[in-house]
Image 1: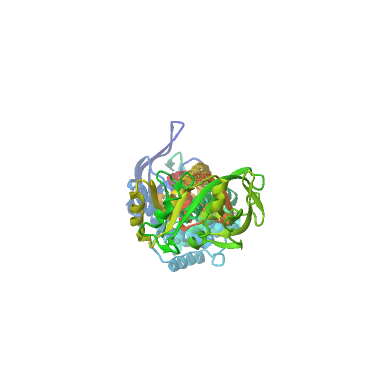
Image 2: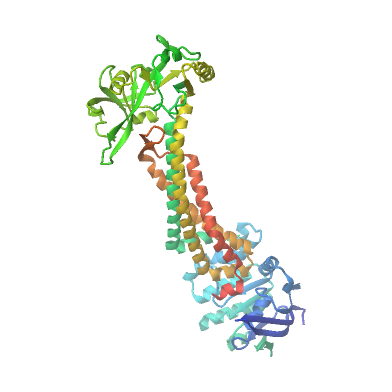
Length: 224
Length: 387
């Protein structure tokens, strides 16, 4: 068993609604081995997305420590956390979150703009990423000119273009038809196997979860 | 940095609201540019009316020719002062009488004052920049008049070969139209000085005396000699300084009025830009959240929305400036507050007017865009993406 790339200890997350505390995660411990493909399942409101956001450095725990890729991120100030995200995490969202006014190529190039890279190098890397997801012939298309499955593959290209260690995917197939779902899951499995990316995927879909190497179930803020 | 194409395309995507904000700023820049161009026109017309080697002599304490009176016997003394260039039969000097006459404006715009200058025949030698575009100079001792090109056709009777009333029961005929390098002389009527003297009962007096100096540097000696003789009670000024002083009141009036109107318009335009940018931020919350998630820092988001707002402003500024440049062909007649007579100005664009317009538009864009940009930068990625 390899060293865990994600290590959570005693993580608590409480939201406040109308001055009432709403505990979502309740003293969670979690170790994610490097190179694993994990599916997080659980009923709505069980805290799956919250857990994913904490690991991705999009949100902070109310209590507890989070160490990802050797970095205790619960202590990082805002600016450093943003930089860390850009270097360590690739995001795949349920509704793709592509910028509608940019082409596929430009969307994929976005994370590279945070690095000092020459324009030609950025272009090359974006093309490589789009080739990996099988969209080398759609580089100049705008999101509205692509199907849902293609949009999600552009999102995956954007997620891997910076060569991050971890991909977080929140319901990546939630908006897709059967065929596209299979394509996207195949692609994620390939990225996990061939490129060694650690993948954390939140999903409702048991068929999607079956593609993962580890399935974890979350219920009432606790891992079952 | 977030690419500029993202901002440009987002603006194009929301073209209706973008256009509204652009038009708001364009309106302000148009008004501001127009008033600045008019100020420049006034300064060019009045301020550009003098020559460096000419001096004007007025009665001490008078700040313009209309309120000044000099005894005609003083004119040869002035001509003999040091520094005056000599011409045929003594120093180059002209003594002129300046009066105003109320005349009817064409096009039903009511009455207005026109400045009438009684000139000697030698005036055309004295002012070689005066050039007749039609007709000829009035003959001495007649009721003939020459009119400036800018005033021609603007008042009843002030047209070639037409007759107008100099004074009640005293008419004059237009025999020539002249240009004078765009100066305020082009808004005057010139009649023989003796005719004016009789018609307006100015026996033994002139309003002003002008001299040609040997060189611009000769002015100090001339001024000292003229002002030293206390019996004469005279004051000498460089012609350029005189006209500049004349343009001050009018230019200040336009400047204050123009800036005042622009200021209130600008408040509206800044508010318009702000509403547009708030709408843009609200509409693009998910995009902002995504950019933040990808690792773009708050500063990038702030800058991106400020740039977007500045783009709107620059477009507005360019449109407003273009509109104002279109006014270049328009002639604008207004009261010169120093002589209470009509002077015709044009809108004169200068590099400064354009730079000011652009600077003000960018300032408006940044002012309108700052709070929305700050709001965008403060969005938390998780919440923003949930929208």
